[in-house]
Every structure is written in structure tokens, then in C-alpha cells.
Image 1 (tube, helix red, strand yellow):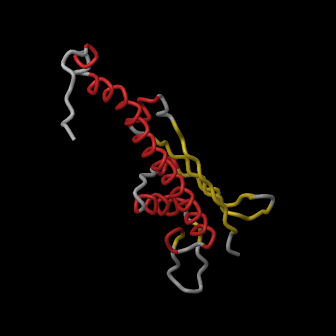
Image 2 (cartoon, helix red, strand yellow):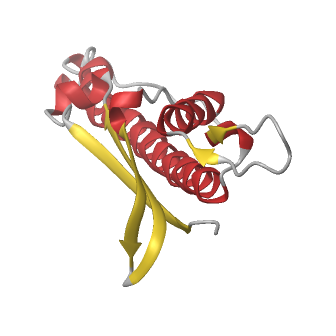
Length: 155
């Protein structure tokens, strides 16, 4: 089989020297937007899941009056008393352990409330501002994730 030869006289072959570079540049922007957009969607979903788990853990801690969320008794016969500052601190520490920074200003704990029509519950509401450089470029930098959970008060 004879070797393939390029035609040197073709005008089409003479004008395509930078075509690959231009095509790559045109396709790179949508490709990178898809890649980084997918990463941000995954980060958003993961953060929302962590906040839901932390809200439930905080509501449970406050509802059961666990040591981390109450004034621990000095005597075993004393009843533990719910402590809002310790509960907020516990929630922030739990979120931080799961790599989500959650200042106490984003934590709301309602010690005695009604959830789904039932009384005497503890409700934890977390409002976290989710942001990144990619979202700022897209104009979505004011996205807030809200997670809430209820747990019955220990009697």
C-alpha cells in the first residue's frame, strides 16, 4: 500500500493552521463551567445534608437535656436544665467538626414550641449563607441554606 500524501496545492489545508486552538478555546469555557458547576452543586448538596444532620443532633441534645446542652447537675438527683448558650455552642462545634463553619448567629433554638401540631418540642433552625467564588461569578452569591429539626422535650 503506498503511503498517504498530503496535497500541497489545496487552499483548504493552507488556512487551518490555528483552527484547533480556536476550537479548544471556544469549547473550554462551557466545559469548565460544567465541571465547576457540578462541583458547586455537589458542595451545596453536601452542606445541606450536614446542616440537616446537625439540626437534628442539636434538637435531640436540647430535647434530652444532654450534658452538652444543659447545666450539668452537681448531684445525680438534680434535674438538668436546658442551657441555650451551651446548645448553640454544641451545634456550632458539631457543624465545625463536619467542616461547615456555622456561627451562633445562624443558629435559632426554640426550647418550647409546637412542631407538626404537637406541643412541647424543641426546634432548631439553621440558616447558613452558602457562597463561593464560582457562585459570585454566576450572580448567585446570596444563596441561603435553611435546615430545621424538632425533637420532643424530655419530661
